[in-house]
Image (tube, rainbow, N blue to C red; front, side, top):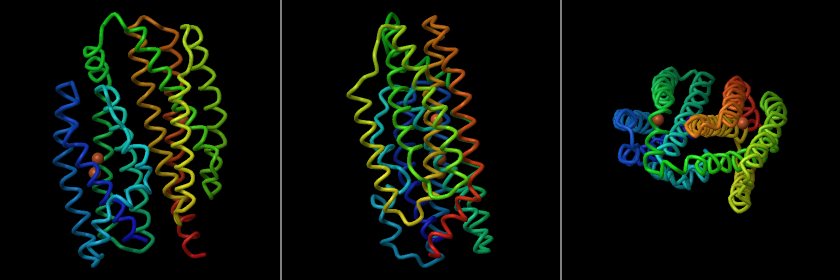
Length: 312
Ligand SMILES: [Fe+2]
Ligand SMILES: [Fe+2]
Ligand SMILES: [Fe+2]
């Protein structure tokens, strides 16, 4: 199991390297670009450390190279298709990705503890800290990301931008409802899902209310596309033997994605002078952050559940 999680971590780092290679050029903001460049070097180090650990375990090279197949287990279907068309979207997806990496190492550390493997435990702790600090760096540059996004747009169209972000938020909440409707297979996360499902329904109502007030509607096509990818996701997770841990990791990254979306919406609305939308975004944002923390509170239970599934 530990080797399998190391292999997952390796594929996550390989994909991260690809992203960090491109990200500085798309960042649009000098400080954000510098953060991405710095994290490219860190990611190279992560990839090397995890690969060496796999080699020490005599993991088959084919297993190490099998990136495409294994990356899917971490919800890559969602992230691989991400097509950040603005510096803001890039920051939001990168923020979510760092949380997914952090989740992967939090879980890996616990599997290593379970197996009494001190070297793997220390590795997971060290890389996890690096992912957390990158997530924090991204979070300290939301203003720059929004500024860069709006600079690339017609400044007169601020109102239209707010509507676009609201539509994105509607689609994200629809996908959240799908995710929260799945059975994670262990009670700790199921309880978090139940609680956040009620909040999520409220979020979608609030977002739709703002769209209404601005004379707009949710984009039906986009919401439909997102729903479909969530359904595929559920199907995929069902096929995974250690779904509980991976679903917890995915949920954590998803809440971070929503957090990023509302960070962007709040700032864009403020610039557009739309205080009501900004206040709504700020309120939902706090819920998403709390939901992410609650998911993080289930790591121990997630690992226990994954170990139980494997023992059956
Ligand atoms: Fe990494
Ligand atoms: Fe990272
Ligand atoms: Fe959420």
